[in-house]
Length: 449
Image (cartoon, rainbow, N blue to C red; front, side, top):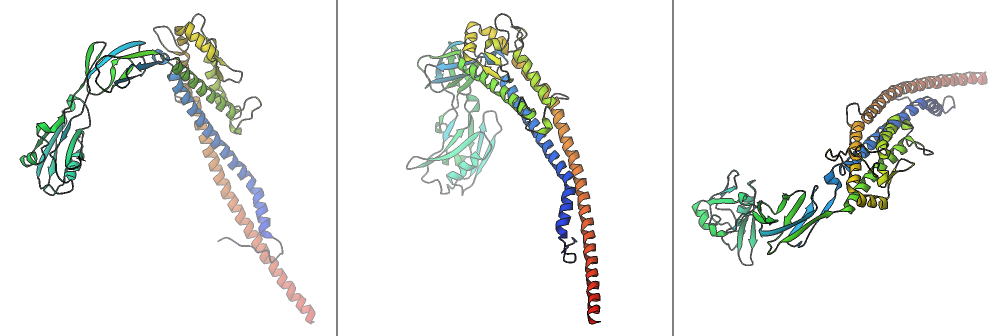
């Protein structure tokens, strides 16, 4: 039980005295708590820095191969019939595409009914098989409505969907495959009562059969199960929208704007890393945002490793373009990168292969490329065995735990010290009270004498 001290015996504000004494003793604890907070914040800074490095690696990987560096775009002469897009590695040139048949899913409908909420009075089993899949059985009860049967079919887990449609006077059920292509045809059998009543197994009620798309690419006939074709031409994806009476021309051309966007994204990610490192450790007149990381060798070492390939000659390059700076990507005094678009565009126009060697890894042209170097550096710094940043973060976390243990111990000692003070002052108050009572008694005797 806590001891309450009134101070009435001595006339002193003993609670204030205790608070002041405790405040003096609490100063080392407050300092430790502040240190722990700083260490925890430093751990978060290292984690954030590592995340920025991962973003840098992602931006580098978007430029580390010839296919990715040679950004292309596809255009169609008839976007209502065929659309196209490049997905990497598309060869510059053109393709003539003619669509003779679109891929479709099977659609089957039932006979018509006057209501979708009245029990049909039909019972039996409907068996459905989609392509080469396992058959499923739907058991229909006399009390089932058209909507009930549709719900049961949709709930089988088969790649089909059943719904009820209304034409303005009658209701019918539509069973529709979820996948296009002849291989996804739906086989439906019904018990006799249901065949007569519903008619899903009646061939004439399948008004759209499952079929493959059929088209030609440069007069080569092809078929696919879907209308989205991604393997007919290298790095090119087609979307077939309708049949055509003449060839649709799909043109693949270089896309300098897309390349410039990738390069700028890399520069932005790189500068984000540099600025984060400078903010954390301090740079020039800029003080470190966290005293625990002031001048931190791990972070500064990471920045140093990243900056080396930015200013060095790239292995495998020859001629005019051997450094990023020669192609318009220069290292600034503060360690950040800057793109000179005029110089970059001129370099691409003059020697596109020479510029690509600065970026890509391609053994056929003898290019090692800066992007692969950066990607390797990020891996070494963040996730490899004994990666410096991971090791630094683990060391900070361990330090925070040790400080937490010290804080707990010091808090316990402080609590004990406070209890001792309260007991001592309580004893003093009691003693002073007894002295006052004794003096009062002596004074009374003197007066009456």
